Image: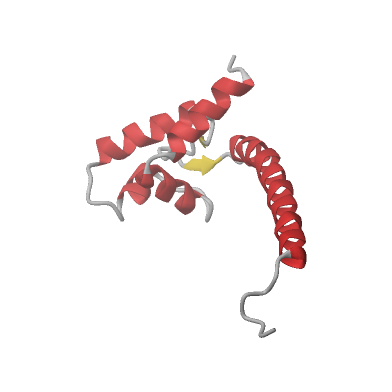
Length: 118
């Protein structure tokens, strides 16, 4: 079983590649077969399968069996977990920027304006 840290590592590793991000974007529109996922890329179907294995290991993609098809689908839970991790830091950065804005406003309030004529 993956720890939370392992899951985040796998998610960010999977998201680091533009082809895998494009596959996820396509799957956000609905299920697709490997052939459908491979169509827009100038790479082989086995290469797409390797990308899908990384996405599956990260829990971002799952497959099901429908007769002879094995459509892939997007699994949102790892993306939600990664977003929650990012959000914690975003809130901290926003607080820091708000504090910096306050400091700059205080400095501007007490500093003489070089453009004003005395």
